[in-house]
Image 1 (spheres, rainbow, N blue to C red):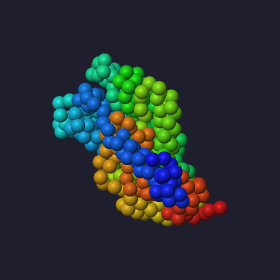
Image 2: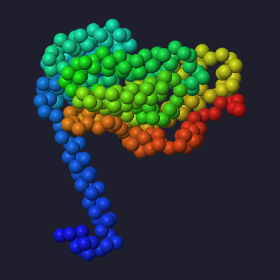
Image 3: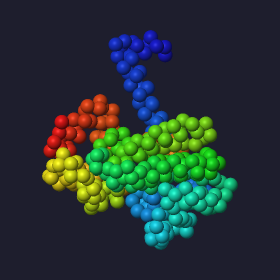
Image 4: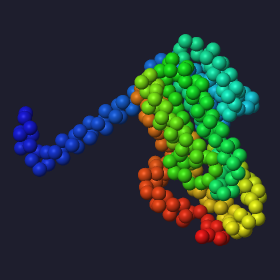
Length: 333
């Protein structure tokens, strides 16, 4: 059947619509098939995860362990390591790790190298992170920014670069946990800065090493109920930041500003935070097990419906939105 016959059968005016629709449907089916295919020999592959004392990292280790991976879990505390080992299988091993210490990272790499041998390291999940201090930028001291950047930015870079030879040997995966706040800078402090940096570092790294068969994936969670979003520490930090301000700066915001700011934080966290952490760990698991992993994964309804679309909006739209939510200082220009 030639194209002329197709035109006559479908109608000349509708032919291209049907053809385009068919191509789109075929593309979707192919994408779904590729997205569902998994790697082989999972039981022979090693994965290193940071920040496993609690939250996403802890849950991910348990999931990967049940799936058959040989999990190497980096924990900040001995209690976190012991608690994880008690609920995991014999193939999960833990190591104490402080991602802000190059010496600690180097020792963890040497330990990992001895564990994986000639197989190399299939995957590393840079999950360790912190959110505090977080608040209006003017309230921060330089060291407040650095305390967050040391974990979320420097820690990710140190872990990735020091472990990279092991990952290249296995032609494996690097999974970096960023955030929707790595797309939209919604508050002050080092958190958003660090997550923007993780996005940039991951993009640059992916383009530099894709020739070696190494995939770099970025996880962009929305707001979830973890230690990072816990209200009590957040409010304590806001009070600490407020108390260290000079009288002149306090006067410019007004006595009621702190209380209003805390009320807004409570409203946002209670309304948006999702308690189902598996939405994030499922993305991490797919990045490690898929034969064709995605470059970016957005997790959570707020990420998909609010933050990701908002990140493509003009800056003035984001500015207006945040001004409608956040309280205004007493003395504004």
